[in-house]
Amino acid sequence: MDTLKVIDTLKVDVAVIGAGTAGLAAYRAVKARGGKAVVIEGGPYGTTCARVGCMPSKLLIAAAEASHAIDRAPGFGVHVDGVKRIDGRQVMARVKAERDRFVGFVIAGVDKIPEADRIRGFAEFVDRNTLQVVNGPRISARSIVIATGSRPNVPPILANLGDRLVINDDVFMWDDLPKSVAVFGPGVIGLELGQSLARLGVRVVVLGRGGRVGPISDPVVKAAAVKAFSRDFCLDPDAHVARVERKGDEVEVEYVNCDGKTVIERFEYVLAATGRTPNIDKLAIANAHLEPGLFGVPAYDRKTLQVGDTPIFIAGDAANDMPLLHEAADEGRIAGENAMRFPAVSPGLRRAPLGVVFSDPQIAIVGGGMAALAKGTFVSGEVSFEDQGRSRVMLRNHGHLCVYGDSADGRFLGAEMVGPDAEHIGHLLAWALQARMTVAQMLDMPFYHPVVEEGLRTALRDLDAKLREARKIAA
Ligand SMILES: Cc1cc2nc3c(=O)[nH]c(=O)nc-3n(C[C@H](O)[C@H](O)[C@H](O)COP(=O)(O)OP(=O)(O)OC[C@H]3O[C@@H](n4cnc5c(N)ncnc54)[C@H](O)[C@@H]3O)c2cc1C
Ligand SMILES: NC(=O)c1ccc[n+]([C@@H]2O[C@H](COP(=O)([O-])OP(=O)(O)OC[C@H]3O[C@@H](n4cnc5c(N)ncnc54)[C@H](O)[C@@H]3O)[C@@H](O)[C@H]2O)c1
Image (cartoon, rainbow, N blue to C red; front, top):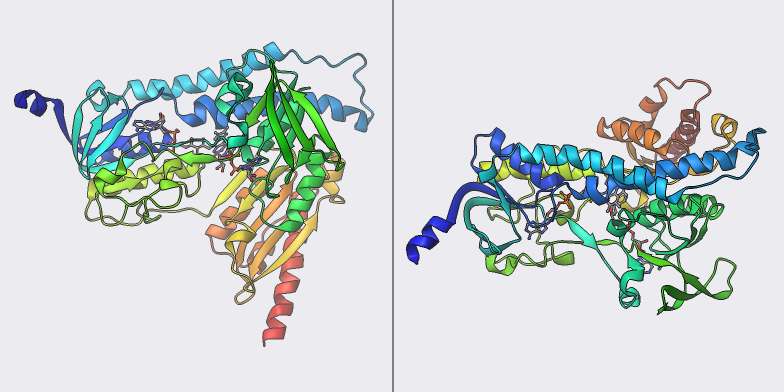
């Protein structure tokens, strides 16, 4: 029996739990340093991003954009005579076929990992250096990387809806578009999926709690976002929902609608887009003497990804810092490198924070936005896109941009934007932030004509004038 146990225990330098974006990056970082590593996966291969996240959501958005382009055309005097017809089956067939292509690339990469390094099953901690895979081997490792991702939260009010309750994963399994969906949560997922479905002819309401809209924290930008989105679908960021109840094959929702009236409405599905929880709770981290912190995540250093002074590292959505794809890839690589170097860990490159929501208008948050800045230390400049030249030309003149600068040294600190081409303006601003540019230096850069970036220049000029004023007052 004892002999069997010894044979069953794999000895490696680094064991990575989770073969998502972060876990695969960690595994590759260890291998690149000549280490012996295994990557343990309990669920399907293919990563959340490719299977049920970034890629299928952007595919659904692309279909919605095609539909919306037809709706917008009369504004230019271009008419499509006849009826616009959306074939839900074709829409979903393309979403799934293209999604499967992306997943295929990820799986081809996984297939290249030597079979001995790929362990199937869910892992749990036995102690700080040992994992037990359920129905699988015991693994002894010098270091362990937790890269277990996250899963959707389902609030108690939605608990008893059976198969009428869906999460993002389910949406991308649909063969056809439903007739109606009540989306709970106007966060990133709720806005992207809710708006796409609405533009594809699905009756949609998006209901929030507490007033948040996506990742926006600046009230000026939030007001512009609510105004822009409300042109498209019923959005109430602080809805008063009295009841959510299954009735036959539908769900009845009693809520106060956008006009302040109490309504009882039936929907084919309810989509829970109410935030995500890191997958830490089922890892038995107590066996490794790790203290669960907020959302169960043990305290760790965001530059080294090390949990305290232990040989355990954490990366990606499991770390619950910035649950975004490029951050998961960076964190996985840093965690893998440091897991291999342990105990001689060193800080990895953390880029300027950037978040983009692919709604229309898009949202971009740079440097963590207004919420990341200490009160009284920054000045804000702004521009509305309502009268911005190129945005008006394209009939995309909705939204607002706020840029923030340090009142002490004139440095650019971050931005929040809802508006046209926010994905691109967000990148320009994130690069300026990482380069530690002052607002004056940013204004020395070229701005072409006529482009949406001229709106950015207006906001920066406004900020520059206010920064000069603040310095005059301080002098
Ligand atoms: C609908 C949606 C849209 C999104 N769109 C974008 C976007 O446009 N841009 C963007 O930047 N980000 C987007 N994201 C976020 C992005 O997908 C995630 O930040 C990223 O995929 C996280 O990668 P990860 O490696 O941390 O987790 P995952 O890819 O989820 O990998 C974790 C893996 O760990 C496995 N696992 C869990 N527990 C165990 C265990 N005990 N043992 C073994 N294996 C385990 C899981 O099965 C899973 O395969 C989106 C997310 C969603 C849900
Ligand atoms: N474009 C992108 O980069 C992209 C796209 C999708 C998802 N993501 C990632 O996935 C993460 C999770 O997205 P998410 O949208 O689930 O979370 P989120 O935190 O962005 O939004 C959750 C929303 O649900 C609301 N909410 C909570 N409980 C509620 C209730 N009972 N009723 C109604 N509303 C309720 C919250 O107030 C919040 O507005 C994001 O933080 C993001 O990092 C990124």
